[in-house]
Length: 63
Image (cartoon, rainbow, N blue to C red; front, side, top):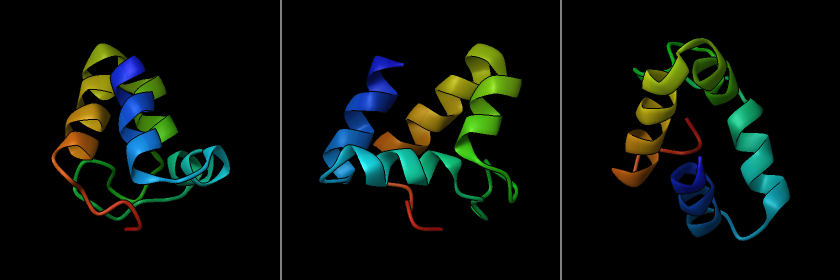
């Protein structure tokens, strides 16, 4: 969780933008049109890890 928070704070200048991104539908492969929150909640530790890896790899955050 801390890694995800840190990555989002690095990418986005304010908390509102980061919060909006995790709640926005995302067409990127790991999300399959769903939100990052949905993946984190339904995927358990693996879902959290996927979101963190995506962000740290420089995933397109506005997909």
